[in-house]
Length: 152
Image 1 (cartoon, helix red, strand yellow):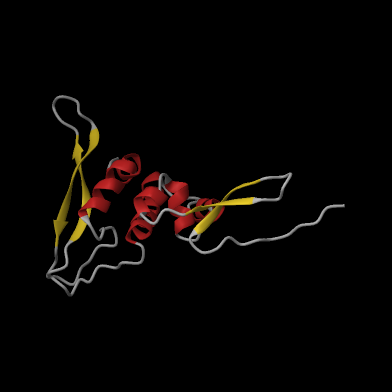
Image 2 (cartoon, helix red, strand yellow):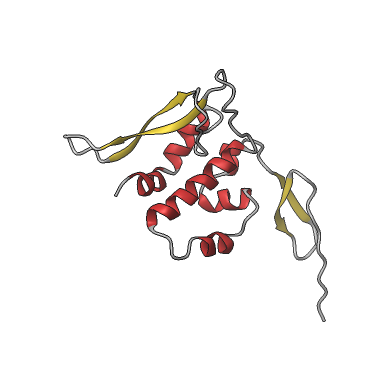
């Protein structure tokens, strides 16, 4: 006969291991820095409260660039941790990754830098980051996804 017990870890912690003989549960602190918490797209999806299956289902029937766009929206949402750009504030900078799109020397597609800009128009972007550091990190970490989105 087996019994199941559900235990939720305290906020800010996750399970690391369970000792089967003693029943001891080892917890580790969840890193606070978003750049540490996210190492891949699965981490992004989980950070946004979705399952990988839900995300896959939402992408069925879409073209590769459309899937990449959905991925980038999820990436930006996760790294911004709830921050939304204020397009009425021209003093608030918004950042996005900048890529090199090939060169005569055959450089191909690669992360280059991040740009910042502000807008005085009523048109905004849902793909900007709250800091240059996050834009650079996401551009480097998810370069292949940006390539699928930006190129034919």
